[in-house]
Length: 386
Image (cartoon, rainbow, N blue to C red):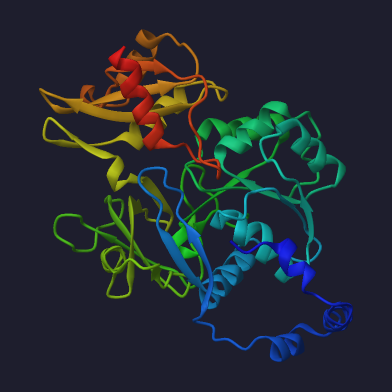
């Protein structure tokens, strides 16, 4: 462990005067004086969220961060006049790039607060500090929505969601209560993180937006390895300067994830006629039932569209002796399951219908705000045993 407190003790008064002088120099001159490394050197090692399996240590270089920083800045027309609410944890790539490096690089005002789940306080800060941009996971955005008052978000020009899929009901709720649009983006720790984004110029709620500049998508048929047609679901592969160097001390996982310059995201999705990327769920969240591939995320999307915004859900699968697997819905409040199943059956085949509903008032979350599928599945399994 290296503690900042110990480092501070070693910094002399002369060092402080020297650093104060250097801080006033033009950025390009400062870099030429200070930076002795290479753009391919490791800038940081971050762990994946571990929402489905054990976290992996991702090596990200200066080139990776710079590529993503510039493409995101361009996509959202970010500038020094913006006031950025920076409250996401820096151990997560979303907070690292969006709440630290982009604002610093653009010379923005950064408003920080330690705890993003103090939702009422967050709304007060956004209003009082006249924040122009805030980003977060859908669960955080839902918390802000519930605790906000009319006018709290009037200063905001951008509200960006990422790290998890954004329910259409949340898009509608922000529009109705605050007349604001949520712009959904898509990425991964391994890609520094941004891959695609909706923005002011082009936006399709429910989609992940269009690929960022410098990022190339390839939708691969998971059986043949060939490129999928428009609107055909396949594995999402990406290429660009934002793609990681590899996993730290893990040659096997690195060789699986990086193939001939392409990073295999482990996600399933498709690209439509207009060039928008649509996320269909993790490959690990597809399950074979009765010989057919069923997307748990697709079931989740339909269920979420039928529930009020304040009720969260998570679809998990458990072993089943007759069909191999069965679908279980974890929800945060009691609902009329018979009526909901009837409505789901109008949109999905019977094979996709949840076999049971389990109430878990507080669905487990990661520190980043993502739903912890692994822990949720274990909770559901334990609850059904009793």
